Image 1 (cartoon, helix red, strand yellow):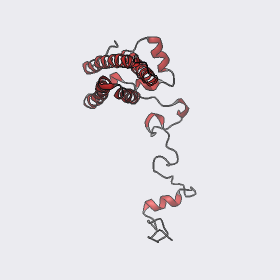
Image 2 (cartoon, helix red, strand yellow):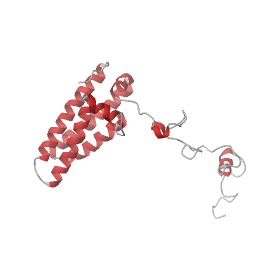
Image 3 (tube, rainbow, N blue to C red):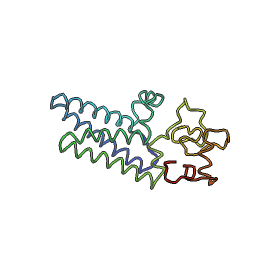
Image 4 (spheres, rainbow, N blue to C red):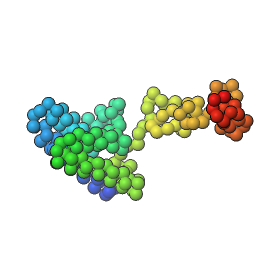
Length: 192
């Protein structure tokens, strides 16, 4: 198992390994029932839980290096783990009582990790990687959104450029308190 310098992180890594192992067992039992849907759902949930187990224990090293340097790097972040845990839980909810129980345990674990991360950020940072910016968006400025999302010309950020020749100039004046603030040329009905 991967070494965690923080005891809270070590506890959650151990609990996660146990939960993922149990998810694989429950999925295997469901898979063995043999109907087509059981096989598909069992394989998907086993695959998700297996990948998350390997990421959690950070073994084998070659697979971790390959995942870390590919488009699947998101599995090392909290957002990626959260999404995969939710998908796995949704599959588990359809696997009878034991699957339903394990789905709730899996969701409880990820919410517990998040709550512990709020209280102890060092443990959270020990367990997860910070998302790196997309190499295609390397030109992004420091004021960008999450994981290198680029906010250009104020379209996504809600800000408009101050250039008077900009197509957004008339929009900007509406929000600056200059002139008509209704946006309808003085007509408050909107029918102009």
